[in-house]
Length: 109
Image (tube, rainbow, N blue to C red; front, side, top):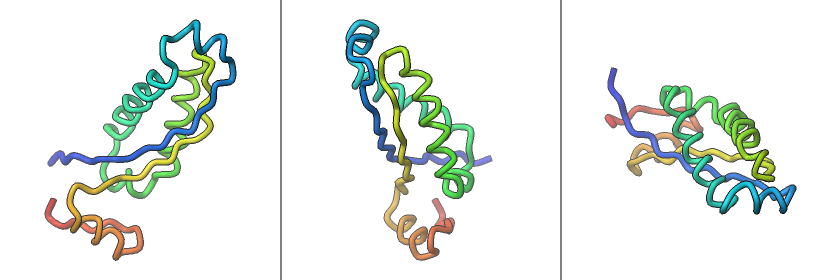
């Protein structure tokens, strides 16, 4: 099995639902949420193949949102949604991906 590096951008939308808890239970709720999001993204994508990632972004985003919301609840943070988009390492990969209307074409990476 050949392992490749996949980069992804994730945008996490969250709000503070309990400001008292967000100050008393965690030192910096924004930064802690950011670190948890990065860890969760790595953990979820690490179990998937490239094809699974590209074909199932919506479910991966939802799964990430559920995990983050559960993890940040005790911090007084509500994760509303997560938007996930893979970022190909090489421009030729992005061009090939776009030219196929969202279907991924292996270009020797």
